[in-house]
Each structure stands twice: as structure tokens, then as C-alpha cells.
Amino acid sequence: MALKNGREYQQSIADLALEAHIMGRKEAALTDHGLVRPSLAAVAVTYDGAHAEDPATRALFRVNSPLCGEEVNRFTHLHQSTDDLVKKVTMQRYCGHTTGCCFQRCVGMDAANAVYSTTFDCDADCGTDYHARFKAYWAGIQQNDLVVDGAMTDPKGDRGRRPRDQKDPDLFLRVVERKRDGVVVCGAKLHQTGMLNAHEMLVMPTMGMREGEEDWAICFAVPTNTAGIRYIYGRQASDTRKLESRSLDVGNPLYGGQEVMTVFDHVFVPRERIFLDGELPYSGRLVERFAAYHRQSYGGCKVGVGDVLIGAAALIARMNGVARASHIKDKLVEMIHLNETLFACGIACSTLGHATPAGNYEIDMLLANVCKLNVTRFPYELARLATDVAGGLLGTMPSAHDLEDPVAGPYIKKYLASAEGTDPVDRIKVLRLIENLVAGAGAVAYLIESMHGAGPPMAQRIMIGRQGGLEEKIRRVKAMLNIP
Ligand SMILES: Cc1cc2nc3c(=O)[nH]c(=O)nc-3n(C[C@H](O)[C@H](O)[C@H](O)COP(=O)(O)OP(=O)(O)OC[C@H]3O[C@@H](n4cnc5c(N)ncnc54)[C@H](O)[C@@H]3O)c2cc1C
Ligand code: SF4
Image 1 (spheres, rainbow, N blue to C red):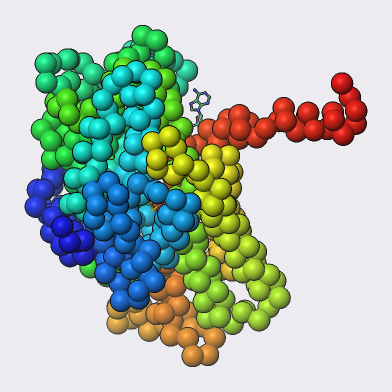
Image 2: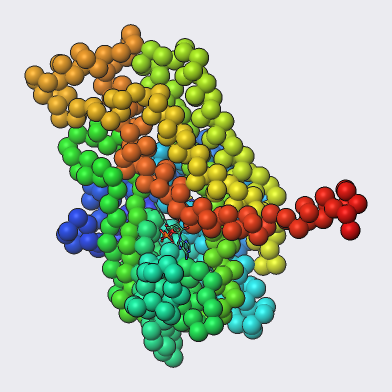
């Protein structure tokens, strides 16, 4: 099947006729909803990339898949080499600096690569047949060029208790009934990126499960319009600006992100869509692998958004007449240095990747975790520097509505004048874009997600501690000093 373009993708989502609770109302026609539309447009960029005029860009998005024997969009690809891993990160950077936000399609790609190798291992050790099922399922995703939401994070209730010890066992998604031809699940997945812009969801356990927690060790896929699933839209800072008649105050006029609380109220999952069911050791392995792929992803997408923030900071410095000041130049250099360090981590963990026994390629786990741990810090520093360069107007500007007021408007234009040749309205546009990323709707993905997405900093520290090779380093020092 031909690769979809952005318009065809948007129509395919409209055809699903999904419904969601948004701001106290049950809403249908979501693809026309002012809060949803920018996020749909951001995902559409991942489709349009495959049809870009520039052949180099097209080549980033198009790849031949040995799984289905066709050319597919890289967002559905199972990586076959370290070159594929590098191209993945490069493509994500492209999408990040094109949209200036989260374009939502990576979670499913990362989940698929983790499920592919984990089902292979599970089958080899346990004699199950999950891998063949998953291959058949994913070949269909590739051929139909679909978006798959990667659903891992459970509500988790009391973080000090195991799933089976929670007052409400649904706080971790679980199997509540077993039928001859499948299972029934209850629970929820929080923070689901782009769920309402997805055709399918791939649900995974939230952590490694232990003995007695077999019902929570479940991995499966269902279409997003499956009966029993309810969606409750997440709020972002300043989100209702998207509903206002003037787009200037939104900051990012075309694109935005989306996170959705997703509730499973007795949802039936047919057997052929189950990829793990009670095989405990593979739940933890799946979580680690998914997390590592997504930690690599941030070395692309957050860098792309960082490009936008750096460009906006440099532009506002020019507009404010401070571009030649040495400390401003130095701050911009620092921003570039931090951003490229993140990219270097994304590229490094890709270049040092390796083939899994299943045949797809996995990143270097240690470096992917180093990448994400840096992501929990550097975008905050970039935001701090951009705030410094932009000036206090970032937090105090009058609204776009006042700009059009016959009395207030001329005052705003008069007193927001800056360096010669700068239109005050253009200056407002740039300031609103920076505001979007450091304190508005865009900060959800650029800052809060940089901290918590793919796991909070402690999760990366644990992995770095495990994989940092401390014993080997001690052994080397002992050998060097002739200590027995
Ligand atoms: C914008 C955004 C988008 C996201 N998109 C997705 C998505 O598409 N799919 C998906 O599955 N998930 C998604 N996530 C979820 C993300 O993976 C989680 O937010 C992350 O794993 C942290 O979990 P939490 O939010 O429950 O925080 P918590 O787990 O409550 O963490 C809060 C703090 O408590 C600490 N903590 C937690 N448990 C313990 C413990 N047992 N002992 C000691 N300390 C503990 C943590 O280290 C952290 O410092 C997204 C998150 C965000 C913010
Ligand atoms: S946060 Fe980044 S990696 Fe994750 S879905 Fe959004 S754009 Fe992709």
C-alpha cells in the first residue's frame, strides 16, 4: 500500500470517529476540535516527511521493511542496522524543528522494537508463540501506515506498594477475566501521548512483575476505537489560547502536543493480539528495552525543539538590539553546546547499537540512559538561558486582542518598538513562541516530559549504575597498582 501523506492520515483518524471528555464535555468530531487539531497536524508532519520534495528528507522517512517486503514509513520500522538507528534520531530532530513540539508517533515505534525482541526471547525460553503473532500484527501496521500509541504508564497508586497490594488492584492495568478466545482487562494508562491521533495502541506492563503478579504482566494491542475504552483529555498550560479567535497568543500557531488519560473498563482483547500474558521475567525486560529506545528518541526530538528555541532566542536578541553583546553571544553558544551534546548522545547510543537475537537493532543501553539523564537537565538550562535573553516581556505582554483595540493597540505598538526594522508584532510572535516552550503548552513536552517521559531521572540513574561497569573499572585500577 502507498505511503500516506498528512492529509490522508488526518482523514483516516477522522474515520475512526473517536470520542473524548474534554473540558467537561463529551466531544466527537475531534479532528475539528481546537485543542486537538494542532496535535493532529504535528503527527501529519511524520507522514508528509515521506513525501518531502527534498530527496534527502524523503530518504530519512522511507525505508524497505524485510517484515512486510515493502517500502514503509520509518516510524513503523523495525531497525535493521546502526544506520537505521542513526536515521531514526536524525528524522526525529527534523520533525522536532519542523513542528517545535512533540509529534507523538515515536512511542509506538519504540514499543514495537521492544516487543519484537522481547517476544522472540520469551518464545525461545518458554515455547510461547507471541513473536509470530506480533510479526503478523506489525506487518499490517506497516502496510497500512498506521500510528500506534505506546501505552506503558499505569496510575500506580501508592508508589510504595506492589500492584497486588494496592487498595484498588486496577491502579495497575490487569487481566480480570480469561475467556477461551482472549482476555478482559481493566485499568488505565496515564499521560498517553497522541492517543487520540492513533489508530492502534500497544499496551505494555509498567514495570517488572513478580510472582503472584501474573495478571499484571500483560502486553497486547487493540484499535483505539475498541468498546470499553474511554478517553479523558489532558490539560496543558495556556491550552485554551488555542480556542481563542486570535492565534498570536498561542505561540506555536500550527502545532502542539497531546496527552490523554485512557481508561480500560472491561475491554476484551482477542488472543491473536496478546503478546505477553503472565511470563514474569519478560515484563521487566520489555520495560527496560522500551524505555531505552525512547530515551534514545529524546536525543532527536528534544534537540529539534531545542533548535527552535535557540533560533527564537537568537532572533529576539536581534530584535531587542542586543545580538552583538558578548554575553548574549556566549549564552547562545552555550545553548547550542547543550543541544548538540544531547544530539551527540542520541547519535552515540545509535552508532554503538547491536543486533538482538530477534534480528532487529537495539541501542547501546548505557549511552541511551546517559542521553535521557542529560535530557532531564539541559532543556531546563536552555529554557533558563532563553528566558534571560528574551527579557521580562516574556511574562507580561498584552494580549493579541488588545493589539487590535483602537485605543490600546497603537500604544502597544509604540511601546513595544525595539531595534530598527523590527515590527513590534513580529517581536510579539517570537516572544510568544519562546513563552510557549518555557512556560506554556509547549513546556509540557519540552520540559515536563524531558523530566518524566521514558521514566524519571532515578530510573536512568539505576540503569547507569547497573551498566556503568564499576567492577571492571575497579579491576583495572587494581591491575594498574598491582593490588591483588
Ligand atoms: C508529557 C508526558 C508524556 C508522556 N507520554 C507517555 C506515553 O506516551 N506513554 C506512556 O506510557 N507514558 C508516558 N508518559 C509517562 C512517563 O513515562 C511517566 O510520567 C514517568 O514514568 C514517571 O511516572 P509518574 O508520572 O507516575 O511519576 P512517579 O512515578 O510518581 O514519579 C515521581 C517521583 O517519585 C519517584 N518515585 C516513584 N516511585 C518510586 C518508588 N517506588 N520509590 C522511590 N521513588 C519513587 C520518582 O523517581 C520521581 O522522582 C508521559 C509523561 C509525560 C509527562
Ligand atoms: S516526546 Fe519526542 S520521542 Fe516521545 S513521542 Fe514526542 S516527539 Fe516522539
